[in-house]
Length: 143
Image 1 (cartoon, rainbow, N blue to C red):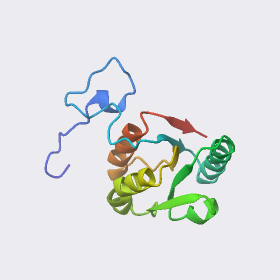
Image 2: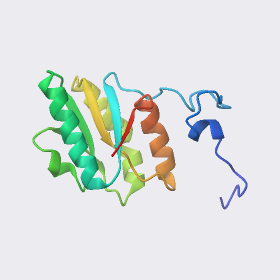
Image 3: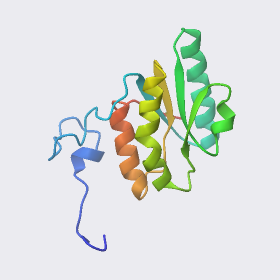
């Protein structure tokens, strides 16, 4: 904003309206996607943890290999499940830095399903959520 005070986000990128077409390729649709199915879970932290554990248990019961992308604050709550630490909720830059390495790592682990905690979408979090939503093909569960 200090350099481009009038910069705007293309409404097609954030609206969820499939009729709107983004002005640049790669801005809206499934992109940066893992081989595994990926689902984001968004809501109050304690509810997100419970929902991810519930979804993981269901998938594992069906014989799927599940990977979890968690904030540092919650990572121990998922053990002994296959869990990767994205970084602290208080450090969006750290999460942004680790994001794609973790997705690639979980792909190398041959996971069938990746469950990921959503991040706060303010500031750089908006870009992180945009990338996560693309990686998940728009699959978002709100709790």
